[in-house]
Length: 315
Length: 305
Image (cartoon, rainbow over all chains, first blue to last red; front, side, top):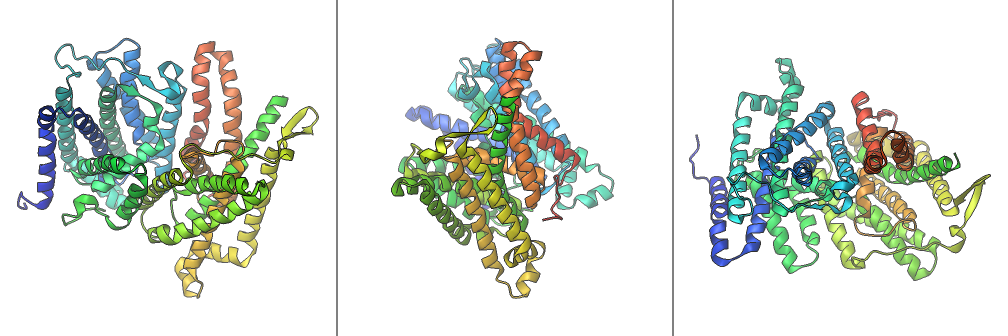
């Protein structure tokens, strides 16, 4: 057991403290914008955590992760449109629908490897994108405004910004905890073993395909929950949430922070979104800096920001 | 029936454009083992160059030729500066790095040409329609696209299969160290192949430009279609890319034209108009998923490059 205070833990801990205290600062200064931005960061970080489970620990480079985000969000939107505003129903449906989609995608795509896996997951996400595009009743191309946040029978009022922020924050902490429990369990060891050497895992008798599929479904379900939160945050769903560049963004968050690390996805999401926000105030053309930055990360920062603190664990 | 034939021609035309894109993509993947998400940016650049040069020279053809050269040069410069260090890295690094290049080009184009987009107008003789078979009038320009793309495809096939350069390209794909050891400048070869792929993408972009609007992000949708094509055809196979392009072009176009009507005979009108377009756009992805389940390496596995 290493000492608890390492630079890595200090950064992760510092970030968590900042996130935990942000509403205090925001209400003190009346900075609504900071609340909105950070709620978004937290929700996207949950999605990134779920992607890290399959991509970082499992070696399954899914290029269609935004689809689950969109399905979770659309579950909330569609149920609201059909007159069901109860979060007790909306959220389980969001999780269930994205888990089901992940089951189908995983069952078909986990048979393939390498570039084929990347592209088939991408293709399924594009399918979901076009399906949403075609749903005229739910806004089609333009998307749909959701006029009522999920109702929790008076227990929780999601219209309360601070409460919603802390709910998202709690779910983020829960997800990071859940993923680290999963990857350190026997199940997680099989998943990580299969990333390093699939043939050997099969040879010692593990049905790798089934383990991977379960892992894929867990990640999809978690991302669906993030989608339900996102729909409540923006009060809006649209097909653009599922366009392939959104899946690319999620991959960027994870790799920027550090693949296969507990806090990497959060660090990466916060860094990228804050950088994007900061740059957009200075220049209209933030991509001129973000793009080459990404290329440099891919080339030289192989362990992500987490890796900077020594002992990069990227496989 | 006439409508069906017309849609088939549209499908072939889309397929030919996809082939121009996919051929470059599959060459770059097959030879350099590089996943290039920035390929769609070169397609976009080709269209912007063509619109600019055609406006400056008042000639579509001269504009197109200049644009082709300009995209080739852009591809070569891009390869030397940004792509070269990516060779030999894993696919995730490729996806990330070229995604960054894509973001860069979108804002670069916005900086240079502005956010509004452009139009590229055709010479008047291209605007007419000719009678292809009795009863069917088809736009000359679309026929030109089909013919020119076929010619480019044939030239490409001849270059790769019958010339010394093509031999080196194929040798580089199967064993790059050995080709390098034999004294071939493999770096230069890679740069040339990337430039060639860029020129093909730019060509597809400038051919498509008069039909659609020239705008930022125009390459992003069609890039995914091109990826679907090379996955269905078998990554690295030009022949596979050709067959799959036409297949995808036909299925996508005919699906969009007929699926909503076919549904209308089964479902009620509102259900059909909701489901139809969505189902039609999903068809090619269903096709790709189906093919990958039964033939995980695509229709023409790359043994026959």
